[in-house]
Length: 139
Picture 1 (cartoon, helix red, strand yellow):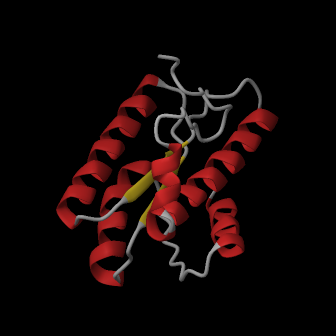
Picture 2: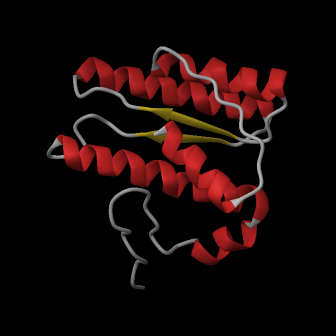
C-alpha cells in the first residue's frame, strides 16, 4: 500500500515524502507523531493491514484511537488507511482494494494540502476509498 500511495503522490503533486515503516499497526500512532514533531511533516498517511481475528480488530481500534490522539496532540492531519484482511472475498480482490484505497487516500492528502475546494465540492456525495462510492443521500 505504501508504494501505491507514494506512486500516486509523486504522479499528482510535487511533494517531499518521508517513509517510516513500523512492525505493526499499534506502532503507527507514535510513528506518525514522530514524523510530525521530529521530521516536520505537514501531513501523514498511516497505512496498515489488520488481520481478521477479533484480537486484530481490537488492535486496529486501539491504533485508530492512538492516531486520533496524535492528530489532536499535533494539530496535524493523519490520514488512516486500513484494509482489513477480511474485507475482500479473495487475495486478488484484497490486493486490488489495498492498491485502490491507498491511491484514493493519496488524492485526499493532495486535496487537504493543495486543493481544499475539491473537498468542499465533494462533501455529502458519499465518496468512499476502495469500493464503489455510496453516492449522495436523496433528500
